[in-house]
Image (cartoon, rainbow, N blue to C red):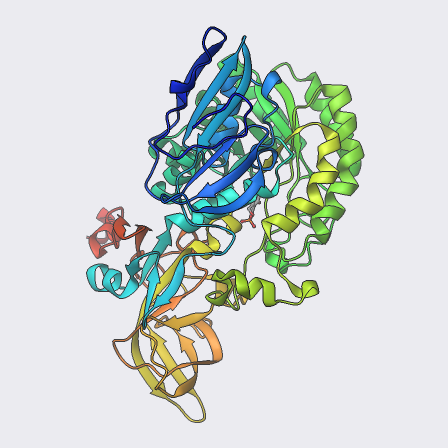
Length: 552
Ligand SMILES: Cc1ncc(COP(=O)(O)O)c(C=O)c1O
């Protein structure tokens, strides 16, 4: 069913093109990607957006303006609607024109779950821990351990929630791929409409290998080489995020050799305390990142004089794993007037506020359920994309700029687990050690940042006793310890565990210390799973090594 008043809704099978108003309407059909099975969202401009299941049961209702912030029908082109829809994972759109003006549109999103009740897709089904509909024990059996497993639905939900949380702004999401750079993950985000926050030539090449482009991606980092700058320019990078004046000169030089202008934004260091771990604080004056706010005007002045530099925007990023919105607000408030000046003076078109949204590590499993969030006292509830957006949108909207977001951890952190097998339970003097086959080389965060990962058995058995133990890896370092005095269901040799919230800065920070090959990676979608990175063999590990002639 379809109405010219824009208040009606159709089921997936409805074909709006059948509803042409005789003589006055011209129908335009856009299909961005094949729609998928499951719940669809159906909405029209001006009317509420209703989530329905296939049987037509109404679900959540929101205004269309919330779902598609940029949808001001008369003033928007179909390309803009299409791009905006892509950002929030919309797969199909029908646009309807009346006398050349966009009158109404319908859109359909693939079903990834209802993000209002499920924050991630890891849960026990019966006694067994599942990722979406896949029994994780089956993955471990097939591919061994240690193995990272990622949930496609959780990533898509995170992406959609963030886009919706910032509704009202013209947002470009650039996934900080340093958090998880497997090309399957990149392809998933590219399909959802994301660009990327890149920090090396290798990352540029990964995006290309994933079948995407860097046209909506930004290139950050304090030490970009000439080769990396050239690679970015040759592939049409959206912008360089410049961290120093010498870097500006280098970018200008490389762009000159190619006869092009390099798009740039300068990274401002706002000197705001992110109240996070010292090793992931980036926006204080003592950090190596960005140009201090008081020197930024001069840096822009310098940039404006270079013949091969085009000033496009401004950037900041204050740190990672922020669990309250206060520091983000403080930073935006601190730089807003300067950003507004840049718009007037240089016509900048965007402001990147970086990434940094934190995730839940302690109650990781329970936090998959919305009820857990509702039960948290308001003053202790961790940051959500909704509260992040509610605090920042009113501050950012008056700037009238495109807003870039560079979240990494939030997009993938709760979407991954690391599976591991128990090697031994070693009962020591006054201390138990649960020795597992994952180690600090596979997941370095506890050793590097003293960070907490919840560790749960793949098979839950409430009849077992609790065990108090240090959970450690086999590496020859005392630092190879995942948890001290952790209470866990008693498990023995050969049994399987999952390290929760391991989707960000897990595999991407892994290494081969102790000549341990890189772990395997598996991607889950619904009831399907596929190996997306095979476990590294010994032969692959030493393939580049050789014994010099003088030792033979
Ligand atoms: C410039 C920049 N943007 C984005 C990020 C991503 O941070 P997070 O994963 O905490 O969102 C980082 C992390 O180091 C960064 O340096």
